[in-house]
Image (cartoon, rainbow, N blue to C red; front, side, top):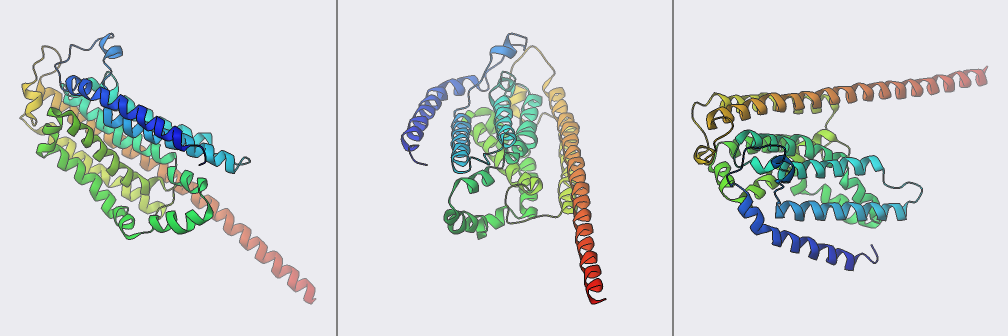
Length: 328
């Protein structure tokens, strides 16, 4: 940690200044009538989200500096590049979801808004967790800090409550239903700052949910593999019901999309139906993919456990044979 203080302050000042300078730009860009998307528009219409820049910039700086600390402390066992790759892939997916030229159409097309949320909750969040930031933190600090501060915090009452699998599962599902069937969704379309906060809410509940599934970082609750499979599988019915409820509605749910003027693309109702179908098919495919990965991990775990038991039995048999030969 030595020598990093001035750099941290400089980095924070630069990111804060950049985010502050971009707030008016984001406020003007978000929700504006967009031209018909073409190659030029899909290359140039980058939309800057100041809150995301602060979050992603701060998280990236912390991860890089902490990985360097681990490399200095453990030169023979530096931080795995694979974990860094997962983490920064998650940051990249989030950046694409909220700031890419495609994302600039989220205030014009509900279907784009839906793809955005699917990427954030079902792709970016698992990738960030596969980067194992908690394990990185634990490896970077002293054993005393681990023992007296971090481990007690991870097992504290509030953390145990918000990470309890049933609560994390319900928070994920409730956020999806509550955000789509409450004034929040339309208000977020009208106010860019609220839209950014909505994204932060989605990231938070997604991290809560997938933390229990990934199971690589330390967690107060360690679910067995069969429970993990069921935990993810049960998200599929609620995702399907929500998606079909959006698809089957014969009226436009959000006045923002109904009153946005454009001369291209699907009608607001057809666009809403496309959003519902996207949530249904893409969401369920991602949950099914996660279930398949979990089942494969379960099988590998059982194979390793079977081999471990075989080794124990072999040692016991060898010890018993040696004992009987000694007695003879």
